[in-house]
Length: 172
Image (cartoon, rainbow, N blue to C red; front, side):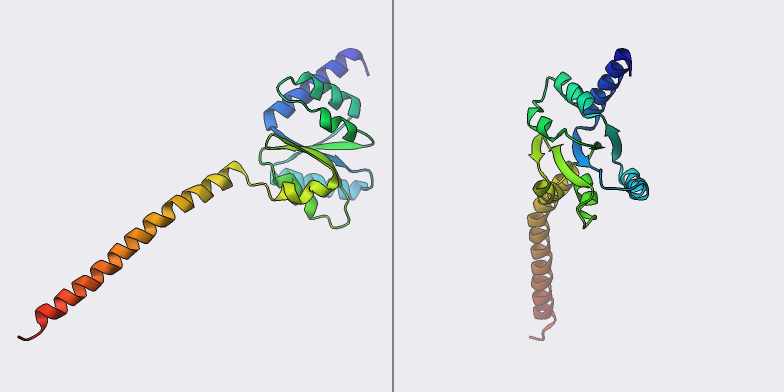
């Protein structure tokens, strides 16, 4: 591969990392062609971009990004590496959890501005809530007290109204 081509690929990888914001480094060595195709289909349906990369080119691309220190990930760049890029941090972890035999294997991940190294981090990554999920929970929590007050006022109003109506209809 020519040096100019490598420079273009490094630039594209760096742009993709910046664009998506979350990525997982995955070892797909033990997967055959059919299993890899199935993983690609699942990734496509889930909105995850799966790319097989050369470790040295990804290393240089991550080094070129000055905003974040990706150095803890560099030890994971050995063997065959596939990168799963995503908008929502927990989607690739949920995809990887579907595979019970541990293939593909999580090497490391950068999600929600945190670095996770090792396959044992998969559960923690799957439990990360997306920005939209957190916002929905906050809105639900904020609405809950208001709903309780409104229902209490409505039920109390009906009770008071019923008592007054009964008292008004009662023969004196």
